[in-house]
Length: 311
Image (cartoon, rainbow, N blue to C red; front, side, top):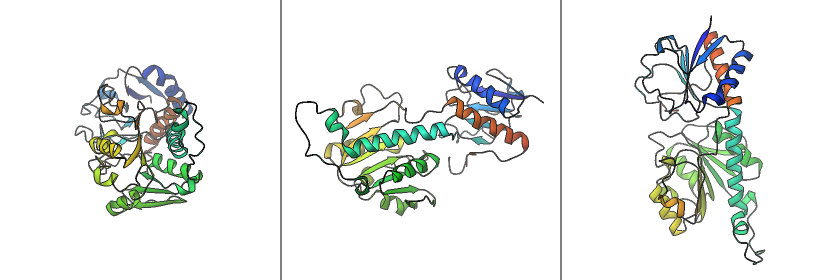
């Protein structure tokens, strides 16, 4: 029996995803009819992105699951019309791109690359010597798939890594803390902080003035998670006072970041345009195909969202 899959992830993504998805469905042995225009009552599975044009899931009564193309689900998890199981995207392309982006910016700040990249003025600055990685404490806020992968990679580079999450986790060679008390301990004297928690009511403004004050003076803040996890005013104040030495930000409360936002002109801020981790069609298509295969076989979906937790 043919499985009807509605692609509701935006017209701009359709040409990029159509062939990888059809190839993945064929590879999984699935008989799938996929398009961007299927009557709601005939849809078996829905591939979703927040800008894909669907906000009311009530008509999709036959739909067995809504499968997100993004790692974050804060735009949909609270939708009262969503009665279907919801899965989020976790794939090797997303993970590897995040690990590479985070590692690059951690190393950039650790070894002080900016001093030499921007200091091409004839001055021989050989007296500036960074500590070894073993003497540079790094804290990762959020130990989901992406945070855990980044923590492992940085640990392998020799950094002493502390990871914090809402619930208890265990990662080899990473000091794992959790809960409210664990958060303050994880931040205290950290020299580099990477923010990778999911965005929920509990993690909005996670890095506020008090918590930024716990960091080692001159610490670096790197945020490829969600913009609302940082109190912007508090971060700007910490940058101006020297409590934070530099902030590298990939995500923002409003995107694209408005041209008049103070981050653009601040000498201690690097803005990147939400590029740290992008879903890759080839690898994500295989995850979607596997989840549809599981749904048809009566097996549990992978990366099922816990509505009560918000991720």
